[in-house]
Length: 338
Ligand SMILES: [Fe+2]
Ligand SMILES: [Fe+2]
Image 1 (cartoon, protein in one colour):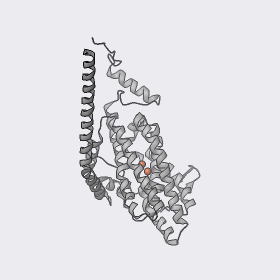
Image 2: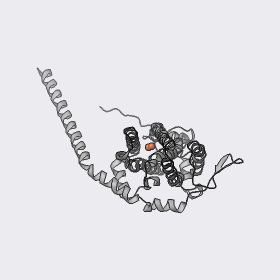
Image 3: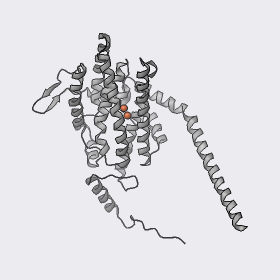
Image 4: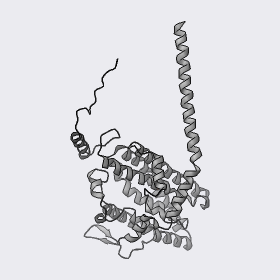
């Protein structure tokens, strides 16, 4: 005998589902994976979360470059832990996209084929060990400014992943700042190394917030859906305001002659980065785009046997469990017959 399970959605029209969706967003409540959502919302989220996941994974490369050359065991252990954290961030985020129906395999293949992007900052090289500190301070710092508001984003799995990620990013930023502070207390050569690194990373760090608002066509829709809660320019300003006093405490300067406090606005004025450079890096012409993707592809290809072995093991374990269950059921049936 079968029991009829009432379906809450039966008799609900598309318009009613859409109204429910908007009411959830309006109430600042979360959309969860099994909730109805408009197809463009799902697509936008998959694109954004995938891009974010890819950035975490590709972002392991510039710093991974220094693990074997860290100046002490302590620095090596810290850097290793930080780079491993980024791998974990990538995994939480790929898991979030899986709840939207996009698998990690499919997304990785799109990344390798150049069909999906990752943050442009990782297309710049790391030329000295000071870059490890600068990346922690400015790049993880910019990531935090971008990501803290995402903890309240409208899609549940994405927001929850961001809470843990932000805690770890905060450790990353502090370790970077502490590294630079240690170097600044060292020799003149070390201080010059820090300044040179900060000069190189300042502009790409400002670009991490994306193009100016009037050149960012998707922002309005993403804000309406509660995916984004602040505009690119708002977040960029926040980052500048936060970073200037930190630079002063460190004893470094940013390479911008127009950087000064504006009493009226209550914010620092600053020069915009070179947006033509940004678009050129996005299009694949940055200093390391080719190298980063080639490395990701070779790691993916080299890992194929591990994925195949894991799948074969999972299948065998499932078969063994099924045959164990059949044996147990058979034994029980015999007992009952006796
Ligand atoms: Fe991260
Ligand atoms: Fe990080």
